[in-house]
Amino acid sequence: MKSVDEYAQQYREIVQAEVSDEPVAAVGVLCRPNGLISAVAPGGVIMRMIGKKKSGGLPMNVLVGVTPTRVLFYDFRPRMTSIKLKKLVRTLPRQGLQVTVSAGNLATRLTFATPDGESFELDSNKSVGQYDRINHGLIEALGATPAVA
Image 1 (cartoon, rainbow, N blue to C red):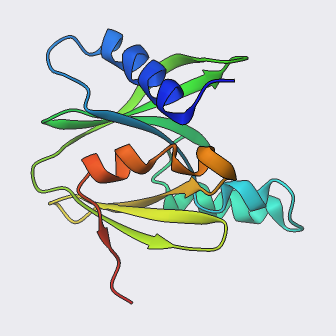
Image 2: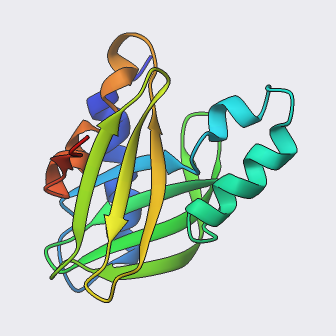
């Protein structure tokens, strides 16, 4: 079984193959707000609609790559032990981008705020064992700060 670090490296290499002009520092897998619970909870359809709005219309799951100048959001398809990128769905410049994090019971919420006042949210689902760390490198590379309550 692969370790978290091996998966993160593999995903980074997949994104790097798409990005030829600068290095990819980190990658992570994020989902729409409450994506995990909306799949099983009563009222899940409503929760998914709210999550889609809060995520700025991004797909249910996105692979996020961070370069020195950009944050790249990819729609992807999981494969047995890998992923296949479908398409780049959004790019944000790093300059002026603010990312805050707030921890919840099932997920860590990342709020992206652009210099022009737009903001959207994505979740880093919590897991068990070593896989709970899958997005730590991404969060660190984004320079995310804890949300003020």
